[in-house]
Image (cartoon, rainbow over all chains, first blue to last red; front, side, top):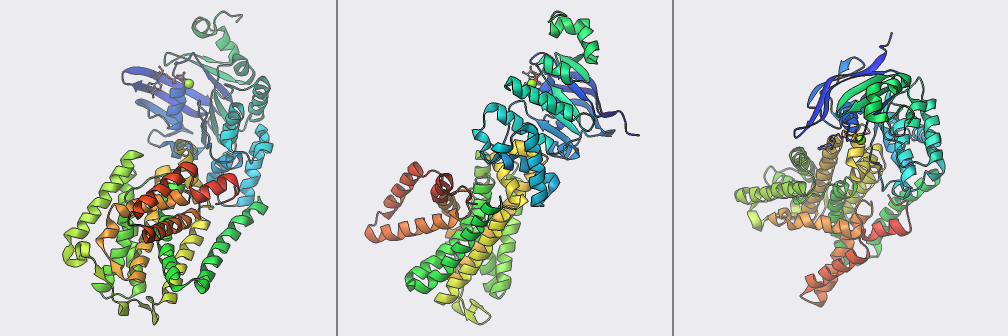
Length: 242
Length: 315
Ligand SMILES: Nc1ncnc2c1ncn2[C@@H]1O[C@H](COP(=O)(O)OP(=O)(O)O)[C@@H](O)[C@H]1O
Ligand SMILES: [Mg+2]
């Protein structure tokens, strides 16, 4: 039987020239669930997921993926294992068409079969509602559409773990609703690690929440448990009624 | 998607058909020019794969051109090889050089990459001068007409020279037309557009860049070997920094990252210098002025502007 956890970190630490961005983070990501990572600005959330995806080298500590230590793997090898990653600051191929953006993401997996590739790309674009814009140049899209395009680039890889760094930032209300529905549709098949500031999105999508503060884990549990946690209320959520 | 994908193929075969037929209508002088242009366009196409498609600006490609040239020249005069195996030696030498330099230089990026490639090429030039006993240094050496024969055909003849240049051009042109639309070429374009993104989509971008460098170097070497074979001269001038700048200019003029751009750029620059030098001795001034105007009004080069304004499908 597959382990309950798909990814685990032990004592993960990142120091930037004396500044401790992450200190001794022990973290478990349950398979097939949506886990939200929350915490104030500068808490170290992006740094943490950067160390999972290999984008940011860790100062010390270990990352285990499906039971295997992946410390030594460079970013592209971790992505190849099935860890998809979207940047906090939108990062698409601005000069290429929307279709080609997603095709680049899919091609590594789908290979040279053009019709299979196009089908895959078409499906991913349809899922995020960008089908009509497939031929537009990505750099010409609105900010919200670029964010959604980046999500399609992750989806099309059919990742085991999908890491999203503040995906709803800058989206309209209706786009946020679509995003929540999309995350719901991934339930069971894909493990989602979601960094999110919008608490209503967190409460509606997350099965588990980890709270990061000053680079350390402040609390973890189900949304109810975290909401009830006194430390969290003090540090981050404000009053219980907020 | 299928309707659009026919146009690039038609363009590719149309260009080759025109070049093939031009020999029949052009006077000998211009046919000779066009043979030279086609060989230099091969060099520009090799450069374009790295600069235009992958986004890496090398200032050291003269080394690969010269490696092809000296690989062919020295193996013919020194070892007595016949043209075909000597050509293979030339391409092999350029491939090896680009693999080694790529391996070292790709640890750097941006301006540092430009400087490192420039330094390696300069070192290559000095090596040619140092071994003057074999290479005849700046003076260079001639490959005898009697040796420049393939299957009994004298390559210094007008038709033979033209069509040998044409075949070399066609092979590289078709190969690149395929390559830049294949998954490998698409990935290079993605790396040019946003390397970090490509990496975070699971591509080993360093490996892709190294492969692009090797293919680019091999094609440049094929051009150098072809040039020596068809025009019978091997000299250190072709290893100078000037010959690293030329392909950059050609590609910028014609359109970086376009298939047809290199040919257009070489053609334009060749005739610009040819015509202006007939009019005045200050021909470089006229050439320079034309370049400045073009950069101002067509910053993407001829084919680049065409793609932007008219034919979005241009590969
Ligand atoms: N590349 C970097 N160099 C130096 N300091 C950094 C770098 N990236 C992040 N930091 C610092 O690390 C801390 C955590 O940042 P980050 O992980 O981006 O937080 P969050 O995503 O939770 O807002 C901040 O104090 C930030 O200034
Ligand atoms: Mg962040």
